[in-house]
Image (tube, rainbow, N blue to C red; front, side, top):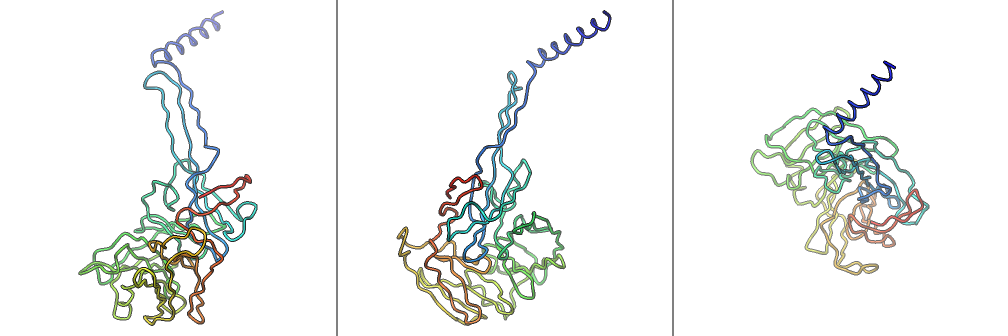
Length: 313
């Protein structure tokens, strides 16, 4: 009887606590069934594209008054590889992070303010590059490289917006308008992922010419530049010598409209300018791929996801 008495006292006290706190509450957490924000983050080759997306969640805490909460967020960033020439039965490969809260590091989150982009044909980068850089390679999980930072001939650095392949196995890092920085402003940086060092620099006489490039990278021992002239002519320069040009005024099929030049950029070993194009590095000629549907970033086409449903973006 004494044990029963104390049990009843415990139940009564629990009930009293619940009343004092305006009622006990339960919390329910669930992930959305569908993923969101799918967009192109890079090209593997002239058939495969890297697409990033994420999954959103909702958490509801039942209760009275201030104890009731209804919050949501996004996380589980995912990287997938699709064939953009041929409709296949789902992606070739996918892997996702398990984090509940989105990092936004790789630019997949719709509200992400962190710079990111394609680094090589199979690697994307993300984060504010200063003391570290985050890399995500197809077939692997993301990893972070801690960096040592050095200034060489300049004292004002910049926010890195572009990381492309460079000379001697390094990478060139640039800001949005850093190549034209004056005075003590750093114009570019050389990133060495092996020695884990990023060196901010000013252009010397041999590289001064790349200031006129819309995008630039190295191909072996050669510096390759894409340069618009007007709204329709694109020049290919190698070591400051024009090698080839293409003239594009309008997209002749699918959506026939004037080409937007804002997305002119190298993507791994390809570049985008009205079409997905490649470069013959032996003859230094631009290779057009007219059978590839013109892409409009970040939206293009439809793919079949792993649940055999069409996803459009």
